[in-house]
Length: 295
Image 1: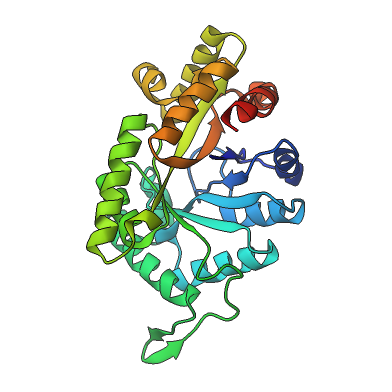
Image 2 (image 1 turned 45 degrees about the horizontal axis):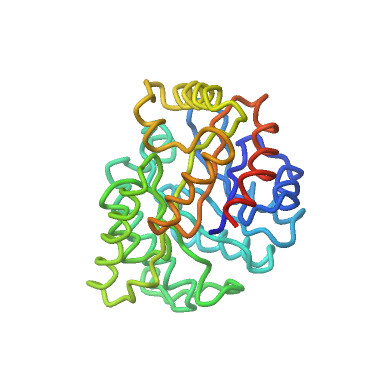
């Protein structure tokens, strides 16, 4: 199981270097344009991370693909893959939680699913070196990504549409706030969709975006996770934390993450569900006591 770490939106390059030193396999960064809370741009954040790391993989979790012209997203992804020496993995999502950012970018929020599907098709052709038609003129991407035939494409989301999108055009399906059973069922749907489209279903793998909290005191871990996620989502998260958020002692968190692995999640991206001043202490426990148990 590959274990990734979600970077804070205020990430400094040293955070990525430390994650690599601690043994994480993936450094992940998310993005929004406007969101009402601190946000960043994944391409820029990961370019900074690439400059201070050598081994760790770099994942956008996730790029809001419908907000980009697809050729621009292809160019940025390719550039990041090249400057990182072929370490970039492109995670995409449809967004929509904050319609204001879609309006600010001139993109109708109701078109986000269609734009994402069309964008994935354009990305696939450009990454492969195939021409796209631009007002009657063929155009190709140059240079191409280091990774062939393309950087791995992750599709984030919990909906059936995200499962089917991963089956049609992705390499990895990554849900969040779901149980291990939901991961297993969704991965089956993604692979069935892949087969319907003439793809090898075994080529679609699973991952999980795991809000998590590790503490030597399990009650404190649960309380911190509840507080952090209530602040993030603005609602009571008690039922969801107990069902979908690995929390507790290092032994308990490792055991819960192993359940996701057994459900088909070959990679997990851990997002610390703690206040900012608790993050470093949790990361020490995660790196020192959870990672060895998973390996």
